[in-house]
Amino acid sequence: MCRFAFFDAKPYDRTGFEKYGDMHNVSFKFLETRLSEDTVGLAEGADGVCAFVNDDVNASVIERLYKMGIRIIALRCAGFNNVDVKAAYGKIHILRVPAYSPHAVAEHTMAMLLTSVRRIHKAYNRTREFNFSLNGLIGFDLYGKTVGVVGTGKIGRIFYDICRGFGMNAIACDPYPDGAANIKYVTQDELFCGSDIISLHCPLTAETDHIINRESIAKMKKGVIIVNTSRGGLIDSDALIDGIKTKKVSAACLDVYEEESDLFFEDFSGHILQDDTLARLLSMPNVLITSHQAFLTEDALDSIAQVTVKNIVDFFEGGDLENEVCYRCDKQPQCKKQRAGRCF
Ligand code: NAI
Image 1 (tube, rainbow, N blue to C red):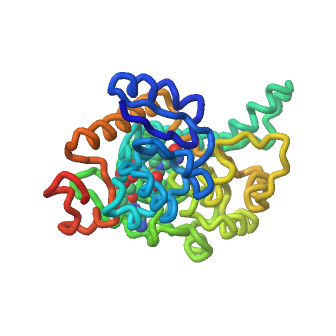
Image 2 (spheres, rainbow, N blue to C red):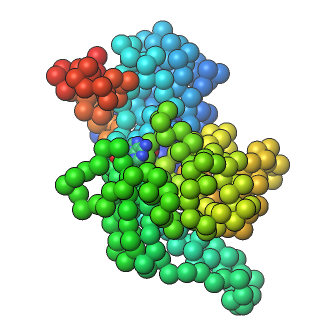
Image 3 (cartoon, rainbow, N blue to C red):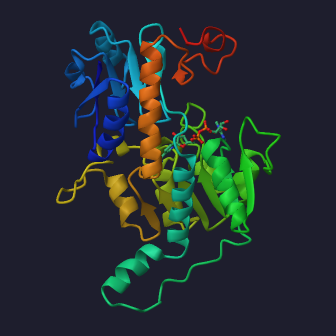
């Protein structure tokens, strides 16, 4: 039986991880706290660590884990921008769940867009107070509008297809366009200039950090709607707030926020929100925020647990690690994974 310290555990994580862990002799010590330099000591005695999106897996945390004898960090998410993969290289293998349910995220993206455009969130609150007035609830048809999809990976292309199903004119940009897919690619600038709705589905990297900023917003159509279910750092929040105040941006749907790590997934009702930028966004009637919820379906949770436990089993059985990531993975042929089955 191998033992894993499971950081940032939530009640909904347990069912799947206990089920697949029992099947494969992997036990999880569920810890409510996040992984950080202050909490890394809780992993003492474990054979590995299981981490999530807001755990801070920086170089110092990695060094401490390495000194404890830990050689695997099993991420139960797709993104790994919170992990110093360069510091981990040669010491600790980083495994992730590259795709658990791209449909969950793409469907949540459309749910947010429809909620915003048809004012469902306002109508829900109104009718609960027996207010059946329609004043202020005018929406618009998605049919015929142009949606710009930034990033046509697993999630982006499903969202693209959903939009096509609504009769929208869909365009997309991606530095690695899929020529075989039935996708209408344009340049990033053409997408920014020509879209009524812009939806972000690219990873957070040095190149995409604040891809939505003052300059890019200036290029957009007046009244553009910006949707982000990818990573908060893709948007410069202050620039977005100014764009909304000047009415250049008519609405924003945000499942992620650049400073979410201290807030999202926790209950702060009854507290004074210290983050003035988030408070400002929440005060705006045309901003819809969910707290990194897009992945949260039964199907996705089951798949996350199943793949994470498989990654762990593959690691300890010495098998190939198809879901390993390292800082050289995108520098083929430098990364050894394709030749040797593991990144190092
Ligand atoms: P993926 O890796 O399949 O696709 C990402 C695509 O973005 C690739 O085609 C890549 O070429 C493209 N890309 C990279 N740089 C770009 C740029 N500068 N401009 C346009 N496209 C660019 O990733 P996947 O699975 O589709 O995930 C997309 C995002 O969704 C990730 O950031 C991930 O972290 C996030 N995500 C959010 C979740 C949530 O609950 N809100 C859950 C799961 C993923």
